[in-house]
Length: 182
Ligand code: SF4
Figure 1 (tube, rainbow, N blue to C red):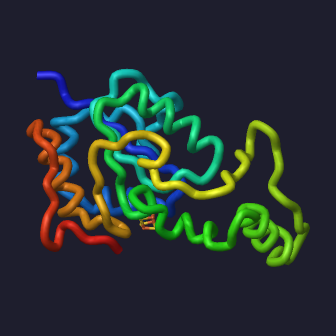
Figure 2 (cartoon, helix red, strand yellow):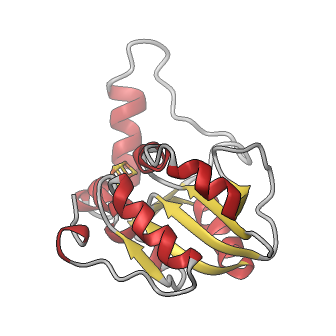
């Protein structure tokens, strides 16, 4: 039987959701036998491939690179899972939105000019440093998403419950303490 083609993606997030994925511990061995990890920060693949079955998306959509990648991912993937609170709601990544319409400019100025001890410079390099979007968006506001996996980060047993459901070919149904933000 063909193994399920799994991808994981890291957009505007802290990587904590991927750290929690690694907390799957010995289930990772079972997973390795049942999936082919075709794209991820955990493997060295440069291009998002065609024909992906499931993609876990960590992080909110915060810059133009995220937008472009997410559109490609949607075209090439059967099932998208918003992986963690930043992907589901914007969460920490979207805190800058409360600053209003000039939020991107304000956070860059604060981080790279006002707080710089040395060489205060805004990071600008066309084709290398992607511009920030005017508002940080949760994934489902950019492309349709099939499933949500909340938590900051989602604990490993919740990630496992979602993956097992998808491997068995049915929709994950989180409930009770498994359906929790933060
Ligand atoms: Fe990090 Fe939490 Fe966002 Fe995951 S949901 S990327 S752990 S801040």
